[in-house]
Image (tube, rainbow, N blue to C red; front, side, top):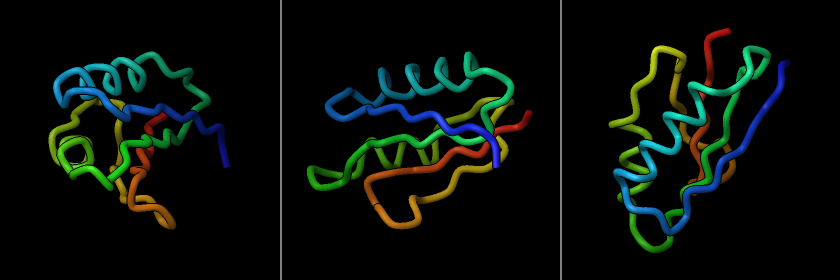
Length: 79
């Protein structure tokens, strides 16, 4: 298993969060194969839905719900 990075976007506006995560993904080192996005879900689902359905980057291979935590989304990256 490769390296994992984490980004926390709690409290951000949707467009700002999408931009921040997209830049984070695109600037991640090539040895990183997984990014955990912490968006929360207790105060609504706007950030979660945006990350899971509106986030696009050529580097993203797969977007998956957090396995144990609904407030996280896992981004699997291409090398």
